[in-house]
Image (cartoon, rainbow, N blue to C red; front, side):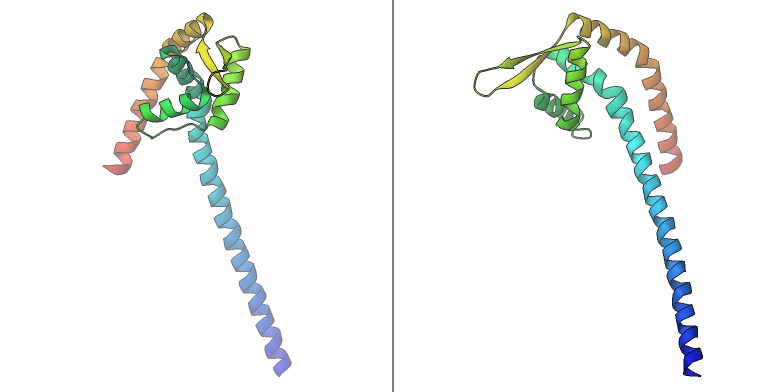
Length: 151
């Protein structure tokens, strides 16, 4: 009799373990989906707008990568502060494309100072023009979604 009772307890435990495992897998899947969605939203900024905005910042004045990140943070009231880990590879790419040029500043501390080239200014103006309608549309969509969800 005790043997049957033990077997029943083992079966109950196995059923509970499987149930918990399935719940765990479901929650993990949901978390991964949320993470991917957040990354996708972040990529709109980093892949789409960051190169354009870096060119804009450099059109105002020449500076280094850390300062570019800081200036974007200040201009966006701290809502978007790109990491320097994303800024420096972007600057290297823009340099290869001849849109910016970097020169080592040998004064107080060695740092590379970037400035926009004539080609970079041309690219900035062209992309600003090409993306203006898309950015305005995106803002309208965000306003509608925000209104639907929160009003």
